[in-house]
Amino acid sequence: MTTSKKKDFENIFEGKRSFSSVSSVIDYLGRQKKERETEDFQQNQWHHILSDDSIPSADLKHVLYKVKYDILFEKNQKQRKLLLSISAVAASLLLPLILIFTLNYQAGIRTKNTSNLVELHCPEGTRTKFTLPDGSSGWLAGGSSIAYNLDFNQARNVSVNGEAFFDVKRDPKNEFTVELDDITVRVLGTQFNVLNYNDDPVSEVVVLSGLVQVAGNEKQFQEQLSNNRKLQFQSEKNELALSHVDASSYTAWKKGRLIFNNENLDEVCRKIERYYNIEVELKKEGLDNQLFRADIEIGRLSELLNYMSLALPIKYELTNQNQNKTGEGKSQKLTISKN
Image 1 (tube, rainbow, N blue to C red):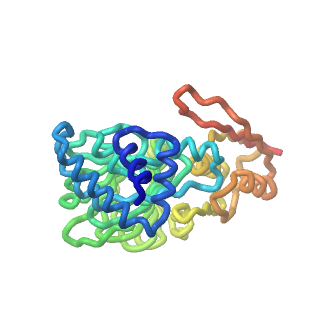
Image 2: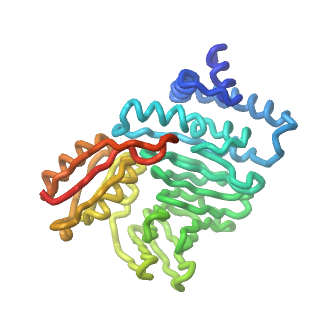
Image 3: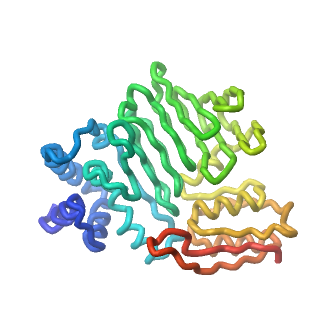
């Protein structure tokens, strides 16, 4: 590692972030051959931070050794927006130590009640790979987050807001639990997808392999799901639905693909909002019974919209809109209506 590169790392650790230093570090981290050297440098920073008496003590070693992020920015992100996202959040996601040890509450990974809780956040328009302290791994979809306690190896409990895929390391003596708003999922070792957005009354579990047990938190029910089984709970209607599905289509997003299996336009629009980070307005008049089927790469939004306009009797309009002073809100709005 060159002297200038070390200086870029040091500036970020000290909170002196600039566009050039963040870009330099991200470029460096993207070269996998440099991974061992980067870990050695972070180890030195770790020990330096531990020697700082001004930082509250906390047992966060498992975060240093176990949590690793791999952010995949999708092709649909404009260059300017991508660079702004990098300068705002990528450093904290690619270098989780920064936020943990400076106790900085920014987008990315942050600790709430640092004595016992760690939260992992994935920015809108991206997908993020994570590894948990027990060796289990998974993916977070854009705008999603998970939270777990620092004593995770003693009690493997995770809460989810948004969409997440889990590949759980088998441990017959230590159950793995995922808590959603309306349901709780219990497993020993399996692969499954969960859906639980705050603005969506639907909670969903899809099993790719293995066996899971799903129980209602308020509505009293308990179901076992095996391969290619889906459970969906609608909280507003208090309705439970079980079905056989192709589970791979529900987990394709972690590989950068979107699969629509004869889905209504409400669900299509929700997915577009989540995976492309834009506001979508659907004018449903004349479109109530329209279903959409496609298997596409998450890339340029215009390609998806052109395909939809060929397959369905729709027209669309994509407009720019002003964000607030803090940069929050969607920069684009998509309007879909009957052609």
